[in-house]
Image (tube, rainbow, N blue to C red; front, side):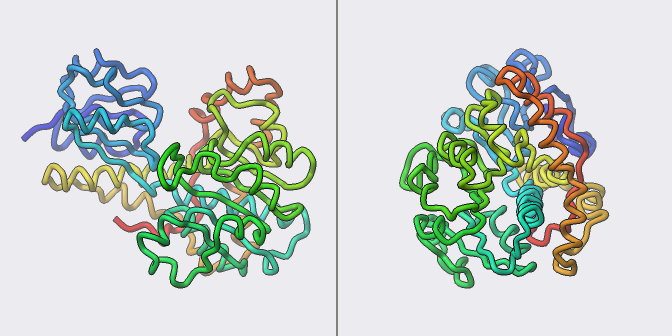
Length: 363
């Protein structure tokens, strides 16, 4: 059976693999329309987060399967896809190491700038999923004490936390010298995360603590962290913002390190996303795909972080150009300039490679 794929041209390696089993068409993420899908008669749509997949895009098309090569899937209207019987899947965890490396750079940069001995400090991780686990592993390796907060995981699989110190959220913000969150943005439900870290929790943080914000803009109260950062109460390194791409200049200027949502933008994360989509499609379509080249690329030129010391890790992470990206982003001093350049910087972000072998990645 031959298939017809419509693939975002920013998903590397996958078109060449899928050409062996079907017809492949490419599109520019933000410019895909209902008419384009109808014209090429695609049945399988593979996107990134720039494409909003909803009724407006898919109505009257032949799409039967939707896959996103990204860890997040908020851009998929899952209720609509369910009502239409359209199968969908994501590449959750594909950019987890990239985000963990970003956070570790920020921690090491903070320690160097403020002359801090990390072996006497506590890292509080809110959300012990794909990113949290990787970050915890690296942090423990260099001697940082790690404490965790993840009520959904504690309830559903407490054994996953058997070797961890799990604290209530009000406790973790009080003991952490570095506080980071890695939770999805959820507006409703038992485990709602919108404004999870609100003003009352932020007020409980230690003086001079480092807050890392790399999940979604709405998880931490932006008004509060901006005020506290400006007053010198805490230090904030932020990669995510409320109402992206309409980011407020006063928020960007308040952060020590400020970047335009690029923590997960490594080239390896894209390769891993492609590989994950290929493996899922293999199972769904019951075909055999040759993913050898993607697998080789994913693991090329990587170091084993467990064999490196703190200084070696910091040296390698400097190659990710996080500080340089922040310097460029912080040059935009008005809301209008930031809006104009936010997506441009993301689109033109250089081909940054991850530093370490992803010890937790397993298909």
